[in-house]
Length: 130
Image (cartoon, rainbow, N blue to C red; front, side, top):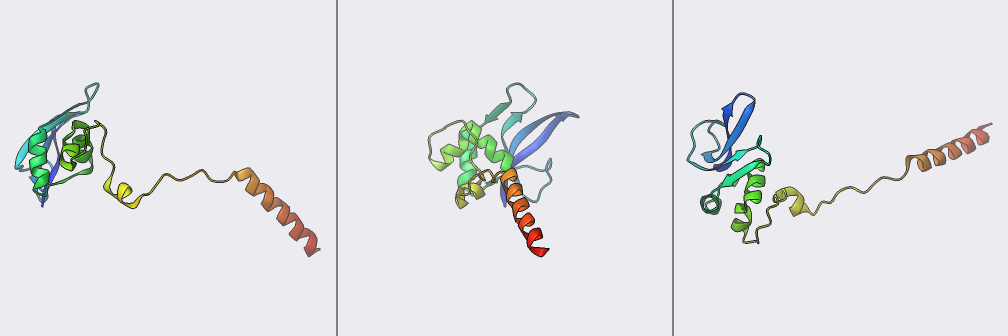
């Protein structure tokens, strides 16, 4: 399977990454098919440069992006070009969350209320036992 993923380059403790198209069986920094961009996380703001035309070309042919590559494709606008949506510059949501319709959890009931209720029921139980 062909994947779009990051390939680490740069010195020790100073990473930068190439966005590459590679066979999923090859090593992280191993043989690649094509380099389609780069990502510099240490610069302020982070630099994301991806060739949208080549990224869409590989996505149309079934290349599967890694999670981080999908975020970078969303930021660069290549993911929205592939999906046919207007470019927003925001990362695309993870496929599992959007597909399942999961939402964030709501806050739980107050702990004090539960503790107060438990104390009153335990007092009643103790009184009835004697």
